[in-house]
Image 1: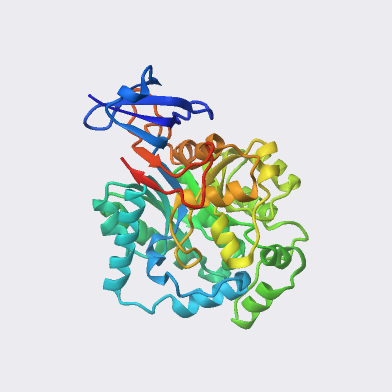
Image 2: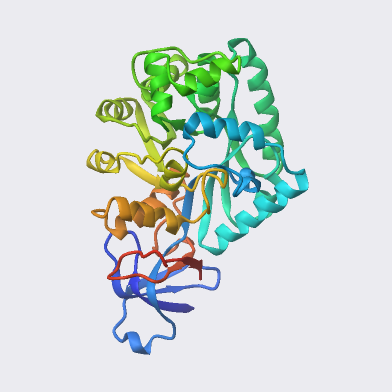
Length: 392
C-alpha cells in the first residue's frame, strides 16, 4: 500500500477539497481510501499543493503538433484557416510523428490520462496504440460539395478500419458547418452516433455565425474565393443549423455523447435547443485557443447557470502555445474568478471522463485508477501563473 497527503486533496466527489487530505492506493494505482490526515507532519509524503485525479483533454488535434510556433495570432477564423491550408504539409512524415509523440509524452507527464483527439489521417495511430494515455479518436470529415458525400464517407470508413486495426476506439465525426455540405454533416453525424460519440466544432467565432445567419463576412468570402460551396443561409445560429442536420438523419432525442467544441457564441436559445434534443450534451472549453485565434471567450457564466456539463480541451499547437490543462484552467480563473478551483477541476477531470464513458477515471474513489496529479504553486487555494502539474 502507498500513501500520500497534500494541503488540498480533491477527490471530486464534491467540489470542495479535503484540507490536509490523504489518499492510499495499491501499486497498480487503484485507489483504496481517502480521508483527512490526523497529523500532516507525520505523513510519509506530504505535498504543499493540490493532489487531483488525472486530467482528461476533451479536445486536441495532436497530429498538428508539428505546427507549434508557426501561426500568427489574432487573424480570426478565416485567417487561421488560410494558415492551416498553407502550413499543413510543411514537415516530413517522420517529423510529424516525432512531434506528436513528444506532445503526448509531455501531456502524460503533466497528468493527462485520457484524450478526445481529432484525426484527419493515420499519423498518430501507432503512437496512440502503444501509449499509456487512453484516446478516443474522432476521424474528422470535410467536404463542401454535396456530390462528394458518398466518396468522403467511404474514405473515412477506410480510415476507421485502419484505426481499429491499431486497437483504437475510433469513429467518424463532422468537423463544422462551414467545411461540410449539409448532406455530409448528417451522414458523418449518423455514422459517429452509431458508435455512441460525436465531437463537433460549433459556434467557434462570430465569423461562423455571420456566415450562416446572413451569408456574408470574411469566412463567407473566404469559402467563395476558394471555389467551395457555402452552408445554407438560415437566419439562425450555426448550432441550430447543426441540430437541424442531426434531425435529418436521427430521430430526436439523441442518445449519444455529443461534444460541442468551443461554443464562443452560444446563447440561451441554443442552450434550450441542445437540452431539448440531446440527452448527453457536453461543451469543450478551449479558452487559450479562442484567445489565440480571435481574442474571444465562451459565455461561461451563462453555461454554468444553465447547468451544462463543461469539459476542458487544449486544441492544437497550431492555435495554442502549449498543451497544458493547468494553463487552460488558469486562463478561465483569470477571466471568470467566481468559479472555484474545485469546479474547474471537475470540468478538467470528472466531466471529461463522463464524456468518454470512462467511469474508472475522473474522481479519487476506491476501486478506481484515475491517476494522481500534483498541482503546485497555489496561492490561497487558487492557481497562479507559476502553477504547473506533474503526474505522481
